Length: 123
Image (tube, rainbow, N blue to C red):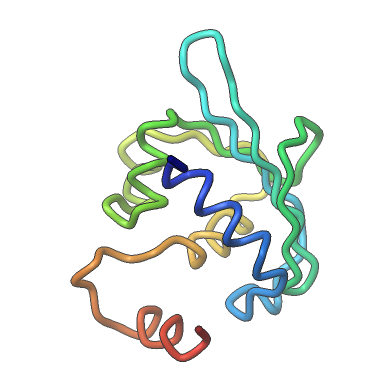
């Protein structure tokens, strides 16, 4: 069974182009820390074209969090910026890239608003 984190990144990689990031370029690495083990997910974004890999290399921005919290983010049960403000996530580097990437995450299941409508129209 595939977890929400893996599904999130595989779906993003399969899409290839994400219109919500059409004006965004840069690299964003997610470091998911659990004890002494860290899992890396690297997003390479070039004006909306997105490639995902498991590389541990330099990035314009690095987000650090626990695998459990990222599962909640990927499933839409938690909000990334709120987690950052609570101190449950760390960001090093270009925080603007993190704010742009926040658009990729699903909103809460019952949420309504422009992002939900746009995501429905794109799919």
